[in-house]
Length: 337
Ligand code: NAD
Ligand code: WQD
Image 1 (cartoon, protein in one colour):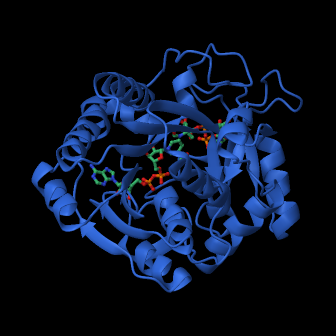
Image 2 (cartoon, protein in one colour; image 1 turned 90 degrees about the vertical axis):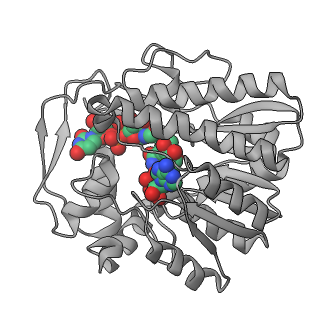
């Protein structure tokens, strides 16, 4: 198939492009490079030995999208493009709704005009909100999200649900990611956040490589085994494979929603200890205040994806740590080297 990948120069997108090419698909990537890099795509070509057709294009640019659809016989779209910094979204709600919601509307309009009605969409476990019982299961309704980023994902889910009611030719897979971490085992591509990382894994990796002095663990008085928060971390390559499984299964009419997680929760402290055990590198840390908006614990009921897509996360925590370190130690400054 010929697949259009929006946001394919970013973290999860670039790993998914590798899996698509290795499975024999042709790939067209569009990205405005606001948080992605051309170098990531050059490295995807090195890993796979196959070309990536790249078009620098914003998903809000209808003319640009129309040109891409008219030049390529696209069969389906995997839609990663979006802004994703939770904290930033609180200060810039308009930018987040404009980019993530309006951008998706323009993309869907261009798809409709081109007669392409198959989409895999990157959503987030954050749409369950803070009140949902764990493990999160897809039958639980979306909850109240505490920031514009999360709300933008919930809004897009609703838009897609309404779209398939109006036109039953649409076939959409909504994938709700838990906490993707790790890197391609080649060490050539990985997560490369701009500025100080917001997320735990890249923060640990940057302390380990000497870019940052020390990790602050946000709170050690939560009602968990060791007092630190628990999350469901999954390997980014497993997540990429999940997109291929969803794409392959996209024969249904309507929207189907799947959790993408391992079904297991790991504490922040255990993440730090596992990293040091696997890599042999100590990560200095201290305990700080709780971070506003953090949930005590969050993990997936991952059984629906296993039953319906035949997908389960296969890589364990040690592999996530080893692959993160292979990437970070070989590329201390990320793609900027
Ligand atoms: P990323 O920032 O590395 O990748 C997103 C890519 O989209 C970037 O390359 C960026 O340049 C591009 N982009 C942003 N706005 C665009 C626009 N208007 N037009 C064209 N390109 C645009 O992020 P990621 O971690 O790879 O996340 C991919 C998707 O998965 C995002 O939609 C994100 O919200 C979602 N998601 C990520 C996580 C996570 O923890 N990383 C969790 C749940 C959901
Ligand atoms: C994990 C744990 C922190 C940094 C976020 C988004 C979510 C999704 C994934 C997109 C928490 C702790 C972190 C640090 C720390 N993204 N931590 N010190 O918060 O589960 O989810 O990313 O959809 O929407 O909210 O992930 O990696 O930020 O934090 O102690 O310097 O690590 O408090 O307990 P989170 P995270």
